[in-house]
Image (tube, rainbow, N blue to C red):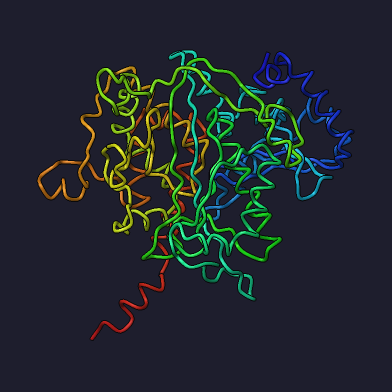
Amino acid sequence: MSDLEAHVEAKGRADRVKEVRKLIDGLKIEYIYYQFISVTGRIVGKGVPADHWESMAQKGFQLVYGATANLFTDRHGEYIGYGPEASELVGIPDPETFVQLPWDKRVGSVYVTCFRNREENENPGGHLTSDCRGNLRILHEAFQKKNGMQLRSGAEPEMMWLKRREDGKPGDGFSKPFCYHIDQFESLRPVFMKVIRYARAMGLDMIQGDHEDAPGQLELNYTFDDCLRTADRLATYRQICAQVAREENLIACFMSKPFMGVSASGCHHNLSLWKGGEEKFKESLQRDGATGMPQAFAYWQGGENFFMPDTSVDQHKPGPVGLKAIGGVVEHLPALTAIGCSTVNSYRRLWDTGFWAPVYADWGYQNRTCGLRVSAPGRFEYRAVDSMVNPYLMAGAVLQAFDDGIARNMDPGEPENRNIYEAIEKGKKVRKLPLSLGEALERLEEDKVIAASMPDDMLRVFLHYKRDEWERFMGTVTEWDLETYWDCLP
């Protein structure tokens, strides 16, 4: 049985397919978006009339392999990842992810898992290794089987709401860069209230939000969960923000650093490892018209958290397993940076060091000058990640770092409680993160542990796409070049 066939015939899936049909009929859904995630975190896929749900659930849809790289060409005119001679992937929907779109209730969406074509000469119907969402599921299942622990994660997606100029391009931030200022938060209330309403209706249990310290910058958080569902929800959150921006004639900007001299948009990941617990449906979401499969509105709760401190030893320090996991991240942080800071623009954030940029491979308690910190008992915050991150690649890479740290009993050292810049001035030796995308890609390619989180085609496609991005930047004359050099001689 191929991977595709095993996925279609998985235990309980036929019943979930029937449940979706009941939702389609009961909600009068006419059209469905079948979605997967490209190498850059972009949502791609196809739309199909809802009448064909059963056929799609069984047979899937076909789309060129190059869609996993946004069907982009590199600077030499070659398609990234796959040429035009490549076969077409098969996207099989995961019915448990089905939800109704709150801004047009005639439309539903469902995430899919991608497979090689059934007619391929090599590994027909096999898992498509350039499917980052499918990779994360496989990596997480392998980690759970080996270590008996589940990765739960929460994301803190900062982004900026920008004014739209008459020519359609972005202008200034909608609000002033006053951090935690309620009046600036209030100025964006029509926007964030709509985002929250849509988000809750699609399964995101929104918990808190604030105005950050850049123009038009908001952070709206949702409850942490299993790492795959958290990644799905971050992708959905971006989709929601884009829709609200259309409705409000704004631009929802997830670019990390559109303005220098103010904070960038990070996307800190809060991580913990758990054993046990249970899935519970968030009944409160029904008040906002949540309509979709129950699993889309469920969250893991309870169990044993291996990042909780052993208070008989230390009130703050994570337990032995958590420390080893942190040790793995510290060890592999240079390579991880290529994934968490995945664009040329990401490194503007790291160079603007006056704004708590996570530049150094060290950890501490509540210490925002370190790249890693224990932000609360039982929770580890990975800070060297920004709002352009592909959360599926990030979670897969973290799993590899955690696994290596646990397997090799890695010691992260003592937590740094001083300002890291002052500690370095006093002689502390700390590795610096890569400070350009080109350097980060070199560190990734050298690190076999983190590279393994992107098996086979995934690493090849990622490196092709990102090297081309770096080369395009290096081959471009910018406004800075002109301003600096046009009249420097004689």
